[in-house]
Length: 336
Image 1: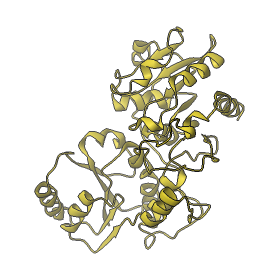
Image 2: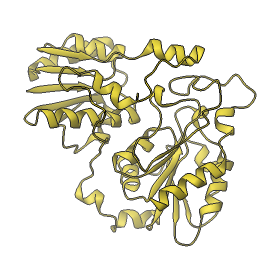
Image 3: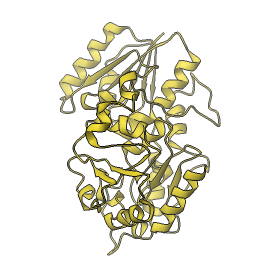
Image 4: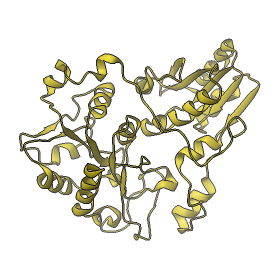
């Protein structure tokens, strides 16, 4: 059986899709699964054991290109198509792919609208993003209470923690990775708070590695004057960042893609959640991971991805999160 799975973006969502990929492969071990995503996200899934081929398309692809791609995919003679994105772009491609069965994700837009605009929560208490993804193709795999953890794969060279790669950045184990940046600044905790966390935890036995893209200015605003703090903002590729995260003791950061990468490698995470929550797809799920958030802020969540500007003079959902809450989470992880 040949299966095409579509998810174009973003980093965190693509990583979350590895859970249903594992479910499909476990249920149909002889199946061949191809995964279609944007070209600049391909490296996330390189080497994943559930995927036979990673297919890509450029982010700027026109409607015509998307249509032509859908038609060309018919050469692969897919039996099943699973659209885990549900975007206009993925629907255009799906329309032109001929196969026996198509499963298209139905997002809980009405429930999310009620929650964001009127703060009426109609979600089941056990709801999470993995459940939403699996419900897309519930006819193939029955809905259960538990689903596989997300997973990513590094090759043998990348898993080697003693080579010159780590030495070139001055990284020595043990270390904690801090991922403070986010696509939307409303999801970022203050650099002063991160600096206080570091100053309370820092010692001669542990390093703090700051990861982020070139545009994550917050990385430069966190105090990195101590020799045990290494700021690698803009200095690592996506695969390099994954490699560093996979060898960390733990991670602290915003609700962002690389936090989900840490969990996919089994690394415990402290996720600092402000304007988003689990009903919006935010947060971490491993038993050892911890979501730090203020559930008493009445206007939270205000958006699905943190893009909506806060109407208040202060962003209480983030500013009310105390340094001690993160320190307590760090200590709980260290003891587990």
